[in-house]
Amino acid sequence: MSFVRLIIISFLIVNPGLLLSQPDTLHKPVVIGLHGSYGFIIPHSGKIKELSHSNPFALELNLALHLTSEDVWKYCYCYPRLGAALHFVDFGNREEIGSAFALYPYIEPYIGAGRRLSMAVRFGLGFSYQTTIYDETLNPRNLFFGSHFAFIAMLNASLNLRLGENISSRLTFSYNHLSNGGFIQPNLGINYPLLGLGMDYVIRPYDFEEREKKRGIVLNPDRSRFDLALFFSGREGKDFDRWFGVYGIWAGYSHMLGRLSALYTGAELVSDHLLRERVLEDYRDGTTDELPDHKRLSILLGHELVLGRFLFSQYAGIYIYSPATPPKPWYQRYALLYRFAPSTWIGVNARSHYQVIDFIDLRLVRSF
Image (cartoon, rainbow, N blue to C red; front, top):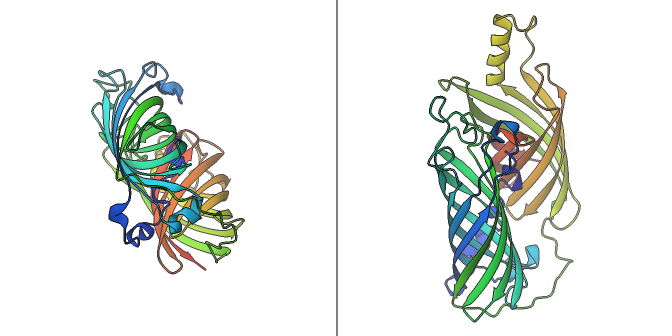
């Protein structure tokens, strides 16, 4: 898995409360778009290298609301679109990889909105259905997907040219990832960059205001934060017949470095019961002479993007205690948290060893 990292979920970086608080929301520009794209599959693991020599083709239908308020502007000095997309992709090998149908919401900040030429960056995360998956007998080479249902995460950059009051064209480059989050194996996931062209039609065109960048605005008055968290997840055994729990505790410290960014350091202790089962099996069949502890302790360092009630973060973790040898000496974590009460957060966090996701956990965080 390389892509849940983009955000697990940064399509929520604009607080929905800002949208709902706008009395003239129904009068904002509504955008309908149709885009086509073509690309290739990245062979991020030697196990799927032979199956990666095909070219995906994708079609996408978009519906978005272009936000125009000053409350939204002050976070990014831009006017973002908040929308959803229906994404269809044919991977160019229908017998072994098949196709995927996905639905994802997204946030798309626009630089130069309202000008004839503008740029935008889209972040999205949603759900996907794969038509063709791994089968030990009938389709053994498809290690991309172990289940029909998965997550899609994407990052898209576009150059947009307004052709008229209501119509604009766009040239896009997107990086896409499909994965089931490590819940069902095999789950190497699929990474496919796409280059595309599309057209957007704007209902109720809007004259975007050129606002002043007020850099003195304090968006996050709490400059420092200490966190304690509990998290849990689940993983499927190698015989696809049992689920094993993953439990952990987390402690960390965050300090704001600017209007939106914070530096984070912390530690986590993870008890992975699938790993415990594996070391027990190795001990019972004589593969190992000792029974190592299945728990792992790590230290982490990372960055946070704090946007209202939402917090998007990415960390690098290094094992300092792991008697059961990990697949790699370090790993990445990507998270999205939502503050639903004062000093209390809930959210999701993904851990991956380089290109392959380990698990996605749910967590409850208390800040001090």
